[in-house]
Length: 249
Image 1: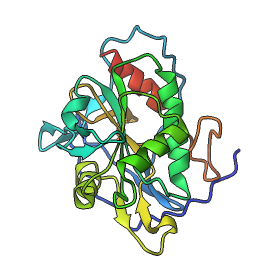
Image 2: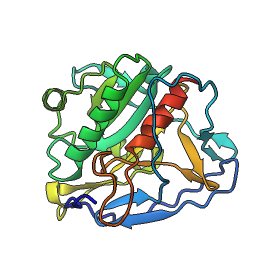
Image 3: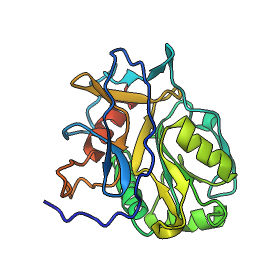
């Protein structure tokens, strides 16, 4: 069992998610140490070479009878280019919220996303959307240096900055991924360590485990670590598998 990292972000608010999703799922919210996470499923293996899947078993999240899409957004990326949600149409991508001066969970999340990036090195239909929650500091130039540091080389990986209020609304309301400015937290901010998965048409997708949706994927535990000291298993492997499923839809 790996040594548990010293997370500094304490989830001080649980967002009640009401998702009508084929079934009437029970969404289990859970606070682990310093971050908001969701009770997730066991790890499974994945092969990027498996092209036999044509229609995935990943469900659509439905709210009031409608499948939930990524809200519209428009921010500048690490190259100073304006990126919107429409730039991701036709691509399967992972969503995260982070900031470059984060002293705790962000480096782990970034490393896990690079590992995912490297699993799909030649797939032009895969991408990542990283939104900084500290746009005052994280300019396009700062984000570009961060991307170079972590070897974020996927051309569809956009690290975005812009109006802080708009970014926080996107996180807290658009994705229900907790984000807040907090002076007492290390680094001055609190945020979720989870990733969201979006399909080629802009819909948020979820696997179903025992009748319940795995809405988000824990981004803080690496495949190499396997589990943390609370017994929570890494979900990078299942995220890779689900990306592969959506790429083959």
